[in-house]
Image (tube, rainbow, N blue to C red; front, side, top):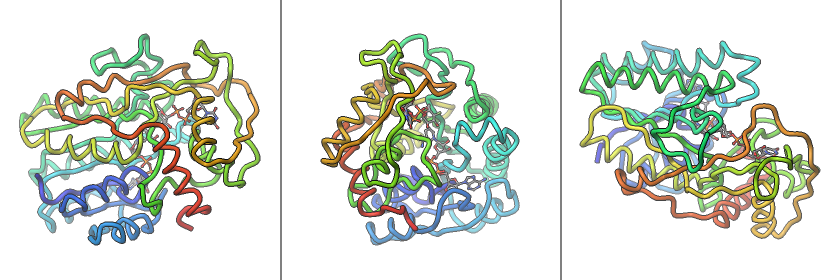
Length: 339
Ligand code: NAD
Ligand code: UFG
């Protein structure tokens, strides 16, 4: 197993859980994060849980000199690249910020990697690159769709860049990890998802309704062609996702080229099923009302994760009840997030 890993965006939601998993494996971690959507509290908590601390560097992935300095200073063999902006709606209004952070940021990171002779990279991609899938479950070789927003386009563009790099230079080993819907929190309840302001995503919204911070959930559409009319997604526990990264890093040690892996559970759950599961886990009601569909939403999206099972030996272990239990524990223990 590789010994020093740089984790960009490592103070954020998925990055902090993955940093924790890396520290638990005895791997040395350098976290680079500009704290635009996080605080270092997540890393302090990860250190509290594991008894080991990552090196933390506050800075931007678009700062090439800073990156060059980090690659010179630390014996980095691998990069886990989470840093970027991720709010779909915001990306429509701030396209430049999204292309700059996500695409320019990744280009800058890759240039510094080439300069340093580091060619092992795992990138946080998204099921958003599939667009509106023609069939479910979605397997990796289906044609990627046309994402309908700048966030999705930025992920799609980065995947193209990374594929081209791997085609041009056989030294690259790249994992394009397409996450489905990450939810939940570490089992300790000490680290979790801490959205800024009103959450965009279903799980943090439900959790804030259950804890009494928001009055009711707004369900975006009950007229989809699904069993109960609400949208269906593949929710995956964030610690399963973190473990998927560990398996991907191991696989990259013996593979070159760019490899796409879906990280999902293979099960789709509707909004109503998630509400009921959360009510069962929290023993609290989640009041809701039905509203029109949200622009850009699709009816159904869930993964065929069998390629990751075959090639990485990875499979999500935690089911919907565990996801809800851990999301609720985090929410209860930290009603105001890390603040
Ligand atoms: P997050 O916002 O919690 O974490 C991203 C981190 O990157 C933050 O800590 C932020 O401060 C940092 N960051 C942003 N721009 C930066 C820059 N230019 N330089 C340095 N640091 C920067 O988000 P997350 O949910 O943990 O997502 C991590 C990655 O996974 C993102 O690339 C996201 O697009 C991708 N992803 C997330 C989801 C999801 O639903 N959460 C789904 C699919 C893919
Ligand atoms: N939903 C509601 N009410 C809410 C929030 C969500 O009814 O307040 C519904 C949505 O309509 C959808 C489901 O809950 O049917 C899940 O919505 P999320 O916003 O939690 O997740 P999405 O599937 O829309 O988006 C996620 C990530 C995106 C990524 C996309 C595809 O947030 O970054 O998956 O991978 F692009």
